[in-house]
Every structure is written in structure tokens, then in C-alpha cells.
Image (cartoon, rainbow, N blue to C red; front, top):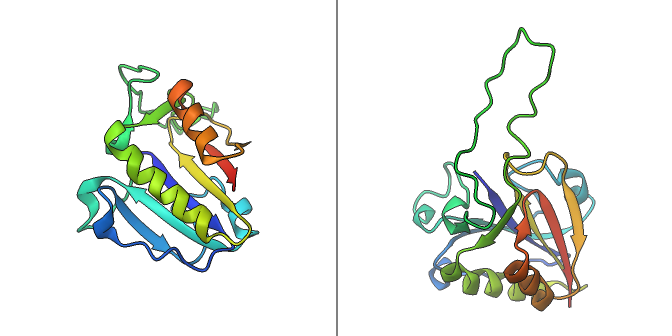
Length: 173
């Protein structure tokens, strides 16, 4: 399932309150992702990270945490994701199911919450730099980093083209 995280670079905390959001959030004072895709980049920086999850996870934040129910999966329709079967007798490495789905958008009813998180993260970053990290095992095999100037530019890209899984989007204020 997909992971969505927002990093506020060099911030010492965002002071978020779960009751102000429809989506589930977990705020942590160290830049440590639930996944390892952007581990090296994050460990070189300081700040606060917000893990974004499905609305129904508010009372179970310690178990599996992902954001599949806030994603519009129809951007790049894929009728069926193929779960790879690992064959230990085969010398050919299976890529784990990557490269099956690339683009996505957030469902309209959650865009307000995501926007509020992005703006709060940017406001609390003393260097005015934030990142939104996306990670999905069925997304592109190779991760990428894309610099987008502003939050408004991010939403324009989101609405016009969709976002790409396994991409870290950098924004500045």
C-alpha cells in the first residue's frame, strides 16, 4: 500500500492536532520515513515528518499504516495489480511488482487536509523547505526527486498531470 509523508526541513515541530484533520496523521520530530526509499536523503537533514494515513487509522496508529484510501486510483487505470511470486529456483530477479502503476491524485475530499499540512510544514520550516514523499511498491522501480517551486505549483501539477509514485517533491516558500 502507498505511503505518503510530509517533511518540514529544520523544523522543531508542527504542533498538529489530529482532531483538525479528516485523514490520520502521525507527527515525529526526526526525519525517519516508515519506508526506506528516501532514507539516505532524510538522514542527512533535520526536521519534522508527518506520516499521512487513511481516515480509519485514527485509533490504530501503531499497526500497519498507509494511505491507500485517500488516493484516486483512476488517474492511470490499472484493472489488476499483479502480485509477484518469488521463485527461488529462477535466476531472474523479480522486481517485486514495480512498474505497474505510476500516476495518482489525492481524492478531492482530502486535498484540503493535505494542503493544510503542506502549508503548516512550510510555515514551520525556518529555511522554508518542505518535501512530500510518496512510496508505493507497485510504482516506478527507481525513485526520483522533483523540485517544484511552490505549493500552488504542486497542486497545479497534481490537478493537471497527476503525481508520480516513488517521487520526493521538494517545495520552497
